[in-house]
Length: 349
Image (cartoon, rainbow, N blue to C red; front, top):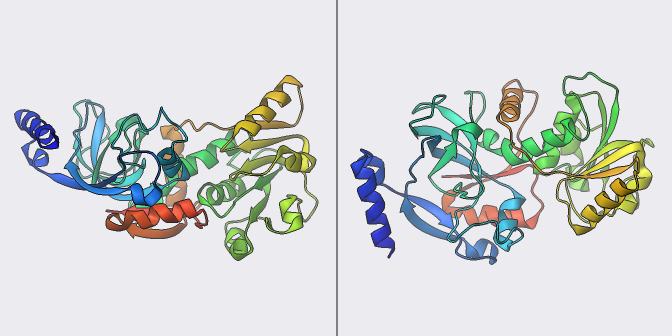
């Protein structure tokens, strides 16, 4: 059956003048069902995808893993994601344009870019992938493919949380705000600390004791160990009350946050579960000044362009926890599931 599918794709691409790419298969990893973690990833050879009119075909140089990738494999978003099996996971990539669709105007073959792939189709665990022009931006020579790939879901989430619900102005203007970042050594957290410090903020951050120096190097004013009684209570060493919490982890109840918030403080929950949604509803219905705000990432090209520019200018950095070849992407998958990465986990074809 698969042989006939490949033959059909081959003939179509031959007819439209894409013989060279059609003749090429690529290495990829996919899973065929929910569950099984890293053991569920299978190495396969599949045809190089064909870009649609508004898409670019990329030769991938780096792919970044996010927790949502393996949570989708676990079935957290079934039946929406993945829409069908087999599925090639991950969406955050850096690479080089090798082919463009007929309606693409901003890019040409040879351009270095960073892109977010369509979450419905995934495709990052492969040698080639297609991306919409609307979520693809140029990558300057000063920014590596790995640094750029880390920016997408993690960097954009941190940016949206700070700029919108937390109302931090990244140009340093506006009144000072006290910000708490939980799990500050992780993918989203390490960007949130750096971006917050571009604004007029005092940043308190939580992490394990082994990452104290790392989180301080990102610019945090105070760092607390979440394993200590004081850290578990989220109490600021200097007695700060938080105007906003960028909540990058799970398992902390509202009752722990509330006494540490300022009069109009907000907890911006990046991974809200049922209890968080209940708290959100209750606080809204009772007109509470203290709010829990669930965050849904809305990727915007202009925000990604900003983040890439900040990396280029040395104002923001992607900290890479580890780099793995595509041939051993299962190791990267397992490390992400383990939950103790410092910064971003990268896979390189």
